[in-house]
Length: 136
Image 1 (tube, rainbow, N blue to C red):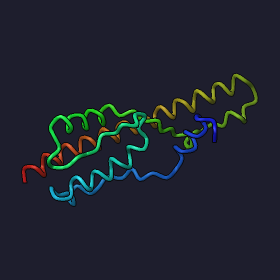
Image 2 (image 1 turned 30 degrees about the horizontal axis):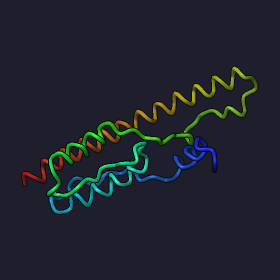
Image 3 (image 1 turned 90 degrees about the vertical axis):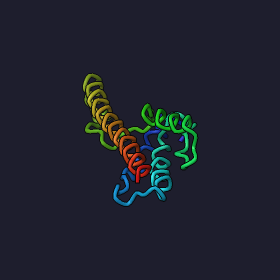
Image 4 (image 1 turned 60 degrees about the horizontal axis):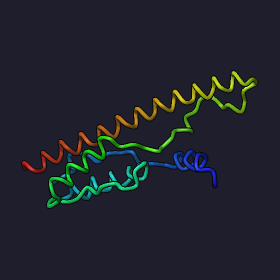
């Protein structure tokens, strides 16, 4: 697809594993591998192509801070077109079409807000587990 907007909408519909690992299975030994995979899956949606790596136990403090700041302010290009309630092409009038587009946009904004909450939960979980793993 040569139209970047249509390509983004198409790519956003692909299957995506949003799951988080079971916290009880995360140890200091597997922490970076387990969460490295989770963040790598989510990085594909980043507007910024320079996504910091999760690192390892010897990663510098500055790199750790950069990692968390990146994910706390993560900006996604992911859209949620499969969840549109209305098909503007079925509208009978221009006004109805505009209304349908606005309603679909409101729903997409809701999904983006939920996506933001999911990522914030991920960052909070990893911070908590990192602290737990360090103190064991």
